[in-house]
Image (tube, rainbow, N blue to C red; front, side, top):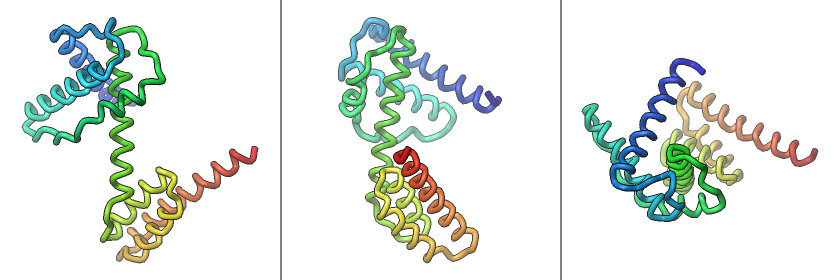
Length: 176
């Protein structure tokens, strides 16, 4: 593990431990609490509170409220059994919430309006990730035609090629 990854991991672990400690201070015993929508909400909102406090303490603006994905997170976790240990439970809930937020980000990006070469490329990347391949390739073509510099055209072309390789790899896997 590189030093940068060690720091990132340490910081994340510290954040998860702060969430666990604050929940315990509020009377929520994560080692015994069952998985409910209220448990998911408590973990996610506590994590957001702590993150915003840290941002403000560093002289930065707090994160905007991205809405309440607790029900989606709870639904995603529905197929899993919570692990033993409070920290492991908090981490599992946070990771599920991040996955839901990432999917929401991809969907909103894939459905966004594009007017410049880089917004077409971003939308194409999101559409490709979501499996909307025809739309992605159309957006890459528009992005490449709009890009003014050779460097930008190469960037778009590289992204399109990576998606094509990913599709070919998937097709190869299916044929085995």
